[in-house]
Amino acid sequence: MDGEREKPLQCQIDGIPYQAWEEPDLSWLKAYGTVFRVWDQRLTGNLCFGVAGQYGKLFVKYAGAKTVNFRGHPTDAIYTLHEAMPLYDRAHPALTRLLAHGPAGDGYAAIFEWRDALPLNGKLKYYSVLDQVRRLPPVHTLTMLENIIDLHASLALDGIIASDFHDGHVLIDFGKNEAIVCDINRYRRKPAFNGQGRMRGSDQFMAPEEYELNAALDETTTLYNMGALAFAFFGDNDDRSLKKWVGPKPLFEVASRATKKKKSDRYPSMRAFQDAWREAVGYCRL
Image (cartoon, rainbow, N blue to C red; front, side):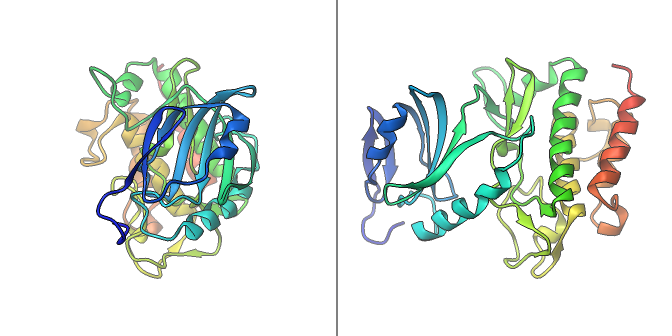
């Protein structure tokens, strides 16, 4: 709660309603077209928009507004978004494509390519996005996973560790049979440590060190996240047993080792995990 009023303002942009504690200056968005969707409930302090105009469809993240669910000050969100921009400076099929970024209004904006995609943890009319993923031919789901693993192996080579990774940040483009990681704003460069105790994220994807104050975060943290993603696709993160596994069996042992509680029981690096994953895929009958 803002502390100055009991209820947030009911705002609008291009006829699309959204909430904020104060109505921000969004006049700068007109240069990109008409807003057709707003995400205003995020915990990150960002307002996000779908915009259509002369540049086609775009996805816009804006930090600087007093959003309803952010506990920090807008300047904290601006800093986090600005500092994250170099992380997106790579071309990879599993990473959302950053087109531009810079000061906007009273804050900071990042402009991304729009994808007609749905979050892995999303719901459809009659079933979940995950249900639809599991109906795909295994070759498609394995390619999705392989691309996300490869993205994180490439980030690890640059000393970047995953943080706040979960199924809400994985988008599924069923038209192209692709998976895209849409948010790496809180990823960190080594050396990285847990300075919070319980870090931001989803319990199903977080490694034990993401709960432990002052614990070191490294590649084994990232590969734990990747193992949890494999269980999201093919198993059950609440019960990581073989009886709950619906994917190719050779991959179960790889995902199980990646999600061991003790770091020393996991693979020693993202590259080692990726090599083991690829070897297991080779044994699969697709």
